[in-house]
Image 1: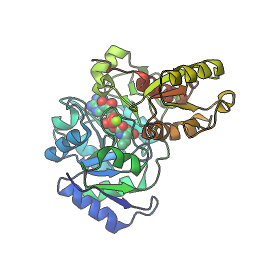
Image 2 (image 1 turned 90 degrees about the vertical axis):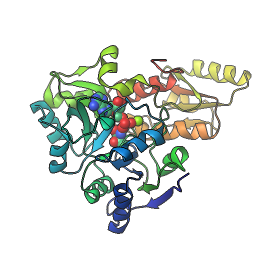
Image 3 (image 1 turned 30 degrees about the horizontal axis):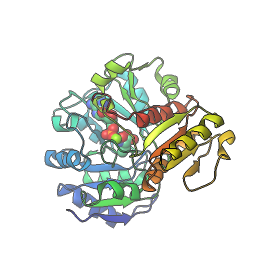
Image 4 (image 1 turned 90 degrees about the horizontal axis):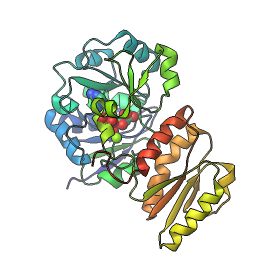
Length: 341
Ligand code: TXA
Ligand code: MG
Protein backbone atom coordinates (compact mmCIF):
# COMPACT_ATOMS: atom_id res chain seq x y z
CA UNK A 1 0.00 0.00 0.00
CA UNK A 2 1.23 3.45 -0.91
CA UNK A 3 0.45 6.39 1.34
CA UNK A 4 -1.82 8.73 -0.63
CA UNK A 5 -1.45 12.43 0.17
CA UNK A 6 -3.88 15.19 -0.78
CA UNK A 7 -2.31 18.56 -1.50
CA UNK A 8 -4.56 21.59 -1.86
CA UNK A 9 -3.50 23.92 -4.66
CA UNK A 10 -4.89 27.21 -5.91
CA UNK A 11 -6.65 26.81 -9.27
CA UNK A 12 -5.59 30.15 -10.72
CA UNK A 13 -2.16 30.52 -9.15
CA UNK A 14 -0.78 27.11 -8.32
CA UNK A 15 2.12 27.28 -5.87
CA UNK A 16 5.26 26.46 -7.91
CA UNK A 17 6.72 24.49 -5.00
CA UNK A 18 3.69 22.20 -4.90
CA UNK A 19 3.77 21.73 -8.67
CA UNK A 20 7.51 20.97 -8.58
CA UNK A 21 6.95 18.35 -5.90
CA UNK A 22 4.16 16.73 -7.92
CA UNK A 23 6.33 16.77 -11.05
CA UNK A 24 9.07 15.04 -9.03
CA UNK A 25 6.70 12.22 -8.18
CA UNK A 26 5.98 11.85 -11.91
CA UNK A 27 9.69 11.97 -12.79
CA UNK A 28 10.31 9.12 -10.36
CA UNK A 29 7.64 7.07 -12.14
CA UNK A 30 4.92 7.69 -9.55
CA UNK A 31 1.24 8.52 -10.00
CA UNK A 32 -0.38 11.91 -9.35
CA UNK A 33 -4.10 12.64 -9.72
CA UNK A 34 -4.63 16.14 -11.08
CA UNK A 35 -7.59 18.45 -11.74
CA UNK A 36 -8.78 19.32 -15.23
CA UNK A 37 -11.79 21.34 -16.36
CA UNK A 38 -13.67 18.13 -17.26
CA UNK A 39 -12.90 15.58 -14.51
CA UNK A 40 -9.86 14.61 -12.42
CA UNK A 41 -7.19 12.69 -14.31
CA UNK A 42 -4.72 10.04 -13.12
CA UNK A 43 -1.33 11.28 -14.26
CA UNK A 44 1.87 9.47 -15.12
CA UNK A 45 4.81 10.36 -17.35
CA UNK A 46 3.56 9.31 -20.80
CA UNK A 47 7.10 8.48 -21.95
CA UNK A 48 7.75 6.14 -18.99
CA UNK A 49 6.24 2.78 -19.91
CA UNK A 50 6.51 1.34 -16.38
CA UNK A 51 4.67 4.33 -14.94
CA UNK A 52 1.95 3.98 -17.58
CA UNK A 53 1.56 0.30 -16.69
CA UNK A 54 1.03 1.34 -13.06
CA UNK A 55 -1.88 3.53 -14.16
CA UNK A 56 -3.64 0.56 -15.76
CA UNK A 57 -3.02 -1.40 -12.58
CA UNK A 58 -4.19 1.30 -10.18
CA UNK A 59 -7.44 1.74 -12.09
CA UNK A 60 -7.99 -1.94 -12.79
CA UNK A 61 -8.26 -0.93 -16.44
CA UNK A 62 -8.01 -3.49 -19.27
CA UNK A 63 -4.70 -3.00 -21.09
CA UNK A 64 -6.35 -2.73 -24.52
CA UNK A 65 -8.21 0.43 -23.48
CA UNK A 66 -5.90 3.25 -24.60
CA UNK A 67 -5.14 6.43 -22.68
CA UNK A 68 -5.33 10.11 -23.47
CA UNK A 69 -2.03 11.97 -23.40
CA UNK A 70 -2.30 15.53 -22.04
CA UNK A 71 0.12 18.14 -23.31
CA UNK A 72 0.68 21.86 -22.72
CA UNK A 73 2.66 23.13 -25.71
CA UNK A 74 2.94 22.73 -29.47
CA UNK A 75 6.44 21.35 -29.11
CA UNK A 76 5.07 18.51 -26.95
CA UNK A 77 2.24 17.89 -29.40
CA UNK A 78 4.78 17.50 -32.19
CA UNK A 79 6.51 14.77 -30.16
CA UNK A 80 3.27 12.83 -29.83
CA UNK A 81 1.37 13.33 -33.06
CA UNK A 82 2.36 12.77 -36.66
CA UNK A 83 0.81 15.12 -39.18
CA UNK A 84 -2.68 16.21 -38.15
CA UNK A 85 -5.39 16.60 -40.80
CA UNK A 86 -6.66 20.06 -41.72
CA UNK A 87 -9.97 19.50 -39.98
CA UNK A 88 -8.12 18.28 -36.92
CA UNK A 89 -6.07 21.47 -36.89
CA UNK A 90 -9.22 23.58 -37.19
CA UNK A 91 -10.74 21.85 -34.18
CA UNK A 92 -7.49 22.20 -32.26
CA UNK A 93 -7.28 25.91 -32.95
CA UNK A 94 -10.88 26.47 -31.93
CA UNK A 95 -11.18 24.31 -28.82
CA UNK A 96 -7.72 23.88 -27.26
CA UNK A 97 -7.15 24.27 -24.44
CA UNK A 98 -10.49 22.65 -23.69
CA UNK A 99 -12.68 19.54 -23.50
CA UNK A 100 -11.63 18.18 -26.89
CA UNK A 101 -9.60 14.99 -27.38
CA UNK A 102 -8.28 14.31 -30.87
CA UNK A 103 -7.35 10.84 -32.08
CA UNK A 104 -4.38 11.30 -34.41
CA UNK A 105 -1.56 9.17 -35.88
CA UNK A 106 1.07 8.58 -33.25
CA UNK A 107 4.82 9.08 -33.52
CA UNK A 108 7.26 6.34 -32.53
CA UNK A 109 7.86 8.14 -29.23
CA UNK A 110 4.43 7.06 -28.04
CA UNK A 111 4.49 3.53 -26.69
CA UNK A 112 1.94 0.89 -27.63
CA UNK A 113 1.35 0.48 -23.93
CA UNK A 114 -0.24 3.96 -23.96
CA UNK A 115 -2.32 3.32 -27.09
CA UNK A 116 -3.36 -0.25 -26.32
CA UNK A 117 -1.54 -1.40 -29.46
CA UNK A 118 -3.18 1.15 -31.79
CA UNK A 119 -1.30 3.21 -34.38
CA UNK A 120 -3.19 6.28 -33.21
CA UNK A 121 -2.98 8.29 -30.01
CA UNK A 122 -5.59 10.40 -28.23
CA UNK A 123 -4.29 13.85 -27.25
CA UNK A 124 -5.73 16.79 -25.34
CA UNK A 125 -4.64 20.18 -24.02
CA UNK A 126 -6.65 20.69 -20.82
CA UNK A 127 -8.02 24.11 -19.88
CA UNK A 128 -6.83 24.13 -16.30
CA UNK A 129 -3.89 26.12 -14.89
CA UNK A 130 -2.89 23.33 -12.47
CA UNK A 131 -2.88 20.63 -15.15
CA UNK A 132 -0.92 22.86 -17.54
CA UNK A 133 1.61 23.82 -14.85
CA UNK A 134 2.16 20.18 -13.94
CA UNK A 135 2.76 19.13 -17.55
CA UNK A 136 5.12 22.05 -18.05
CA UNK A 137 7.07 21.18 -14.93
CA UNK A 138 7.46 17.59 -16.12
CA UNK A 139 8.44 18.85 -19.56
CA UNK A 140 6.53 16.22 -21.53
CA UNK A 141 3.06 14.72 -21.92
CA UNK A 142 1.22 12.95 -19.12
CA UNK A 143 -1.29 10.18 -19.56
CA UNK A 144 -4.52 11.01 -17.88
CA UNK A 145 -7.40 8.62 -17.85
CA UNK A 146 -10.12 9.69 -15.48
CA UNK A 147 -8.90 9.08 -11.91
CA UNK A 148 -11.57 6.53 -10.95
CA UNK A 149 -11.53 2.77 -10.61
CA UNK A 150 -12.46 1.23 -13.95
CA UNK A 151 -16.28 1.18 -14.49
CA UNK A 152 -17.03 3.81 -11.79
CA UNK A 153 -18.24 7.37 -12.50
CA UNK A 154 -15.38 9.78 -13.21
CA UNK A 155 -14.25 11.87 -10.22
CA UNK A 156 -15.14 15.55 -10.12
CA UNK A 157 -13.53 16.25 -6.72
CA UNK A 158 -10.35 15.18 -4.94
CA UNK A 159 -12.43 13.25 -2.41
CA UNK A 160 -13.91 11.13 -5.21
CA UNK A 161 -10.37 10.28 -6.30
CA UNK A 162 -9.46 9.32 -2.74
CA UNK A 163 -12.55 7.08 -2.46
CA UNK A 164 -11.39 5.05 -5.46
CA UNK A 165 -7.60 5.22 -5.41
CA UNK A 166 -6.50 5.58 -1.78
CA UNK A 167 -3.42 3.42 -1.22
CA UNK A 168 -2.81 3.06 -4.96
CA UNK A 169 -1.31 6.46 -5.89
CA UNK A 170 1.19 8.86 -4.29
CA UNK A 171 -0.50 12.24 -4.56
CA UNK A 172 -3.78 14.01 -5.33
CA UNK A 173 -3.70 17.70 -6.29
CA UNK A 174 -6.94 19.24 -5.01
CA UNK A 175 -8.05 22.41 -6.81
CA UNK A 176 -11.74 22.10 -6.00
CA UNK A 177 -14.63 20.68 -8.05
CA UNK A 178 -14.31 20.32 -11.85
CA UNK A 179 -16.14 22.98 -13.88
CA UNK A 180 -17.62 20.80 -16.62
CA UNK A 181 -18.06 17.61 -14.59
CA UNK A 182 -18.20 15.27 -17.59
CA UNK A 183 -15.36 13.99 -19.80
CA UNK A 184 -13.97 15.47 -23.01
CA UNK A 185 -15.40 14.79 -26.46
CA UNK A 186 -13.22 12.31 -28.37
CA UNK A 187 -12.99 12.93 -32.13
CA UNK A 188 -11.07 10.71 -34.56
CA UNK A 189 -9.58 13.06 -37.16
CA UNK A 190 -7.64 10.35 -39.01
CA UNK A 191 -10.81 9.65 -41.03
CA UNK A 192 -12.91 11.93 -43.19
CA UNK A 193 -15.51 12.92 -42.24
CA UNK A 194 -14.12 12.90 -38.72
CA UNK A 195 -15.89 10.64 -36.28
CA UNK A 196 -17.06 11.41 -32.76
CA UNK A 197 -16.09 8.37 -30.70
CA UNK A 198 -17.32 9.68 -27.37
CA UNK A 199 -19.63 12.60 -26.74
CA UNK A 200 -18.43 14.91 -24.00
CA UNK A 201 -18.06 18.52 -22.92
CA UNK A 202 -18.27 19.69 -26.56
CA UNK A 203 -21.50 18.93 -28.38
CA UNK A 204 -21.72 17.48 -31.90
CA UNK A 205 -23.20 20.83 -33.02
CA UNK A 206 -20.18 22.73 -31.72
CA UNK A 207 -17.84 20.42 -33.61
CA UNK A 208 -19.93 20.62 -36.80
CA UNK A 209 -20.02 24.40 -36.66
CA UNK A 210 -16.24 24.35 -37.24
CA UNK A 211 -15.62 21.46 -39.66
CA UNK A 212 -19.01 20.62 -41.12
CA UNK A 213 -20.37 17.09 -41.21
CA UNK A 214 -19.09 14.58 -38.67
CA UNK A 215 -20.02 10.98 -38.11
CA UNK A 216 -21.21 9.76 -34.80
CA UNK A 217 -19.89 6.22 -34.88
CA UNK A 218 -22.32 3.36 -35.27
CA UNK A 219 -22.02 1.12 -32.29
CA UNK A 220 -20.09 -1.78 -33.76
CA UNK A 221 -17.78 0.50 -35.66
CA UNK A 222 -17.23 2.62 -32.63
CA UNK A 223 -16.25 -0.43 -30.62
CA UNK A 224 -13.37 -1.09 -32.97
CA UNK A 225 -12.21 2.49 -32.95
CA UNK A 226 -12.61 3.40 -29.32
CA UNK A 227 -11.95 0.31 -27.27
CA UNK A 228 -13.02 2.05 -24.08
CA UNK A 229 -16.62 2.22 -25.17
CA UNK A 230 -16.83 -1.58 -24.98
CA UNK A 231 -16.57 -1.71 -21.25
CA UNK A 232 -19.05 -0.95 -18.53
CA UNK A 233 -18.71 2.67 -17.59
CA UNK A 234 -19.77 5.57 -15.44
CA UNK A 235 -21.67 3.26 -13.15
CA UNK A 236 -22.25 3.61 -9.42
CA UNK A 237 -22.53 0.40 -7.37
CA UNK A 238 -26.27 0.86 -7.12
CA UNK A 239 -28.58 -0.21 -9.91
CA UNK A 240 -29.52 2.78 -12.08
CA UNK A 241 -33.05 2.99 -13.53
CA UNK A 242 -34.06 5.77 -15.94
CA UNK A 243 -37.44 7.54 -15.76
CA UNK A 244 -38.97 9.60 -18.56
CA UNK A 245 -38.84 13.34 -18.12
CA UNK A 246 -41.65 14.70 -15.93
CA UNK A 247 -43.20 11.24 -15.43
CA UNK A 248 -44.23 11.75 -11.83
CA UNK A 249 -46.57 8.81 -11.69
CA UNK A 250 -43.92 6.33 -12.80
CA UNK A 251 -41.41 7.77 -10.34
CA UNK A 252 -43.82 7.41 -7.44
CA UNK A 253 -44.79 3.86 -8.43
CA UNK A 254 -41.16 2.76 -8.75
CA UNK A 255 -40.09 4.36 -5.46
CA UNK A 256 -42.80 2.43 -3.70
CA UNK A 257 -42.15 -0.81 -5.52
CA UNK A 258 -38.40 -0.83 -4.86
CA UNK A 259 -38.92 0.09 -1.23
CA UNK A 260 -41.39 -2.73 -0.77
CA UNK A 261 -38.73 -5.10 -2.05
CA UNK A 262 -36.51 -3.84 0.78
CA UNK A 263 -34.29 -1.51 -1.24
CA UNK A 264 -32.85 1.81 -0.16
CA UNK A 265 -33.98 4.08 -3.02
CA UNK A 266 -32.18 7.20 -4.23
CA UNK A 267 -33.54 9.64 -6.81
CA UNK A 268 -31.95 12.25 -9.08
CA UNK A 269 -34.45 14.57 -10.75
CA UNK A 270 -34.33 18.01 -12.32
CA UNK A 271 -37.77 19.03 -13.62
CA UNK A 272 -40.12 21.15 -11.56
CA UNK A 273 -42.73 18.41 -11.96
CA UNK A 274 -40.65 15.88 -10.05
CA UNK A 275 -38.78 18.16 -7.65
CA UNK A 276 -41.51 17.99 -5.02
CA UNK A 277 -42.08 14.23 -4.90
CA UNK A 278 -40.02 13.89 -1.72
CA UNK A 279 -37.50 15.73 0.34
CA UNK A 280 -34.76 13.70 1.93
CA UNK A 281 -31.02 13.17 1.63
CA UNK A 282 -31.82 10.39 -0.82
CA UNK A 283 -33.75 12.72 -3.11
CA UNK A 284 -31.45 14.94 -5.17
CA UNK A 285 -32.86 17.82 -7.19
CA UNK A 286 -30.30 19.01 -9.75
CA UNK A 287 -30.47 22.26 -11.73
CA UNK A 288 -32.53 21.79 -14.91
CA UNK A 289 -30.01 23.68 -17.05
CA UNK A 290 -28.00 20.82 -18.60
CA UNK A 291 -24.68 22.59 -18.19
CA UNK A 292 -25.13 22.65 -14.42
CA UNK A 293 -26.77 19.27 -14.37
CA UNK A 294 -23.70 17.79 -16.10
CA UNK A 295 -21.48 19.41 -13.50
CA UNK A 296 -23.25 17.72 -10.59
CA UNK A 297 -24.42 14.41 -12.04
CA UNK A 298 -21.40 12.21 -11.18
CA UNK A 299 -21.17 13.79 -7.74
CA UNK A 300 -24.79 12.97 -7.11
CA UNK A 301 -24.42 9.35 -8.25
CA UNK A 302 -21.39 8.93 -6.01
CA UNK A 303 -23.07 10.50 -3.00
CA UNK A 304 -26.06 8.20 -3.25
CA UNK A 305 -23.67 5.28 -3.59
CA UNK A 306 -21.84 6.37 -0.44
CA UNK A 307 -25.17 6.47 1.36
CA UNK A 308 -25.70 2.86 0.29
CA UNK A 309 -28.62 3.34 -2.05
CA UNK A 310 -29.46 0.01 -3.73
CA UNK A 311 -31.38 1.58 -6.60
CA UNK A 312 -31.02 5.07 -8.08
CA UNK A 313 -33.94 6.39 -10.14
CA UNK A 314 -32.75 9.08 -12.53
CA UNK A 315 -34.93 11.42 -14.59
CA UNK A 316 -33.88 11.52 -18.25
CA UNK A 317 -32.91 14.81 -19.89
CA UNK A 318 -33.71 16.19 -23.31
CA UNK A 319 -31.05 15.10 -25.82
CA UNK A 320 -30.04 18.56 -26.94
CA UNK A 321 -26.62 20.11 -26.57
CA UNK A 322 -24.86 18.70 -23.50
CA UNK A 323 -28.07 16.77 -22.78
CA UNK A 324 -26.97 14.25 -25.43
CA UNK A 325 -23.76 13.62 -23.49
CA UNK A 326 -25.62 13.33 -20.21
CA UNK A 327 -28.01 10.75 -21.70
CA UNK A 328 -25.09 8.79 -23.17
CA UNK A 329 -23.59 8.49 -19.68
CA UNK A 330 -26.92 7.70 -18.03
CA UNK A 331 -27.63 4.88 -20.47
CA UNK A 332 -24.21 3.40 -19.81
CA UNK A 333 -24.68 3.72 -16.06
CA UNK A 334 -28.05 1.98 -16.37
CA UNK A 335 -26.60 -1.05 -18.12
CA UNK A 336 -26.09 -3.72 -15.53
CA UNK A 337 -23.69 -5.91 -17.51
CA UNK A 338 -20.66 -5.11 -19.62
CA UNK A 339 -21.67 -4.56 -23.26
CA UNK A 340 -19.25 -7.22 -24.37
CA UNK A 341 -19.70 -9.65 -21.47
O1 TXA B 1 -12.02 14.61 -20.00
C1 TXA B 1 -11.32 13.62 -20.21
O2 TXA B 1 -11.17 13.14 -21.35
C2 TXA B 1 -10.63 12.98 -19.01
C3 TXA B 1 -9.68 14.02 -18.43
C4 TXA B 1 -8.90 13.51 -17.25
O3 TXA B 1 -8.84 14.50 -19.44
N1 TXA B 1 -9.95 11.77 -19.38
C5 TXA B 1 -10.63 10.64 -19.72
O4 TXA B 1 -9.82 9.57 -20.07
O5 TXA B 1 -11.83 10.54 -19.70
P1 TXA B 1 -10.31 8.08 -20.19
O6 TXA B 1 -9.07 7.29 -20.38
O7 TXA B 1 -11.14 7.73 -19.04
O8 TXA B 1 -11.12 8.03 -21.54
C6 TXA B 1 -10.45 8.10 -22.78
C7 TXA B 1 -11.31 7.57 -23.89
C8 TXA B 1 -11.55 6.09 -23.74
O9 TXA B 1 -12.89 5.80 -24.13
C9 TXA B 1 -10.55 5.49 -24.73
O10 TXA B 1 -10.98 4.23 -25.22
C10 TXA B 1 -10.52 6.54 -25.83
O11 TXA B 1 -10.63 7.76 -25.14
N2 TXA B 1 -9.25 6.49 -26.55
C11 TXA B 1 -8.02 6.72 -26.07
N3 TXA B 1 -7.08 6.56 -27.03
C12 TXA B 1 -7.73 6.23 -28.15
C13 TXA B 1 -7.32 5.92 -29.50
N4 TXA B 1 -6.04 5.93 -29.86
N5 TXA B 1 -8.28 5.63 -30.38
C14 TXA B 1 -9.57 5.63 -30.02
N6 TXA B 1 -10.03 5.90 -28.78
C15 TXA B 1 -9.12 6.20 -27.86
MG1 MG C 1 -12.71 7.11 -17.82
